Image 1 (cartoon, rainbow, N blue to C red):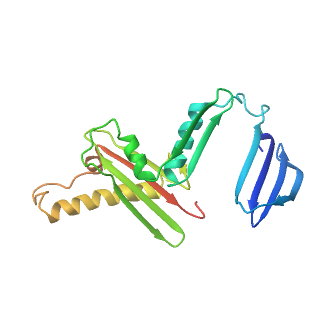
Image 2: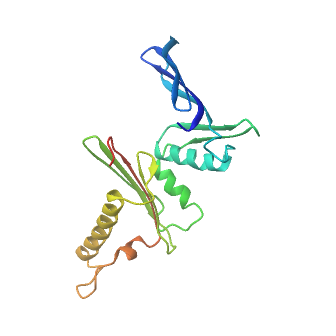
Image 3: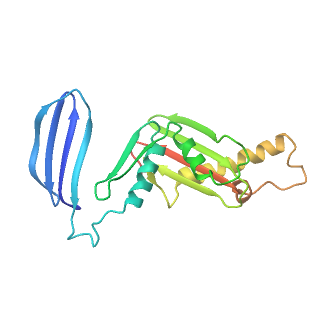
Length: 206
């Protein structure tokens, strides 16, 4: 709907399929155009200048987003090529969101050398968390659902904050780090100097 034209080519189940749209309307129906042993999808499109004031792509914006996608999907390779300037970069991170945390903290003095990584699933929902403390004062938490940055937060973010505060206070009480006559640490206390990535993959997000 936002493209002057868009062509999609899909390699699946031994066949190559193609379809074309123009300004939201199908102008070439889905058809088989060949056979293949590969799988994957290729999308070519031209943004509609009748909708967008600016149709000149920002290399830096694309670089930031594609690097983010490579962090969030461990092991995939994303290649960005700008044919205007012949600038090219490749993003690949076997460490996934652990590498993301290390990247965000690379100019900071960290409290512990390796990020803490947690992963779990329930049904079709998968959750990953990577966190590491540095000696700064600000918190740096990014949360994602299906690779989309949830800047407004959500239950996944508020749940994490509550669980982190409770876990650290429980540990402090159990091992007498927090004395009986002392108050529990607040959420701001336990998130000071924290860098964290929360990534949720869910089939039907609300």
